[in-house]
Length: 226
Image (cartoon, rainbow, N blue to C red; front, side):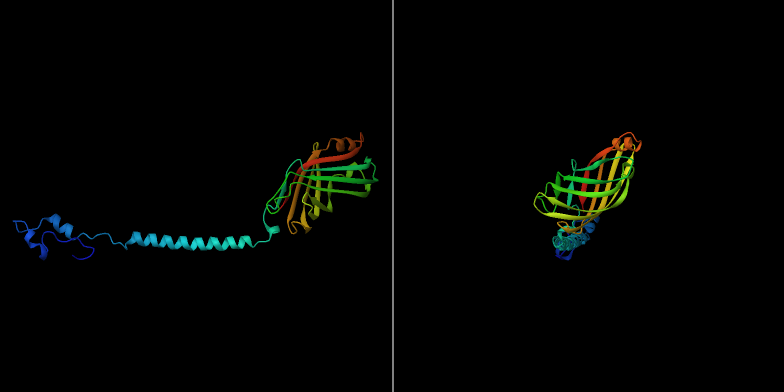
């Protein structure tokens, strides 16, 4: 018997004794004798082999990429830190602002939290406070832009120094403060900082009409390090 070929049951030389009395082999027998078995190394097996080779290559590539990710510095990872409401900023003015420019003492207290960090899981809250003397301040100059620097102290005892650019706007009765910048030192150095907070602008609007003063502004929002 030849490997991979069915035997000629009717007309092969080794099976003449099985020939029918008619002297001819049935057509079906010739059809059977010419039918080949499935090649164990046929297209399907080759296809499986190719798939296994591709999967092995992809597995090796994934392992290599994982190794690269582990070697990435912590501060470069996306989403290093996010602090959600009631993250807030409380700014007070002494004396209270009017429409007349005057030198004032500005005190700011910032509370951050609840916070979640992908690189420093122990961080849950943070604080920043400062006092500044600002010349020529009035309630007419509360909307605008500028730059500032601050250092946040986290509940872990670690700190982050920030260099920020801010823009404040008043639309309707809403005061909005947007800050963007970078962490220039300490924890998360090199990260980009984005903060967005809003609060009531009712006192500011009243003051600009000459009908009151602004003793402080309170805003609530988020801050993210990426």
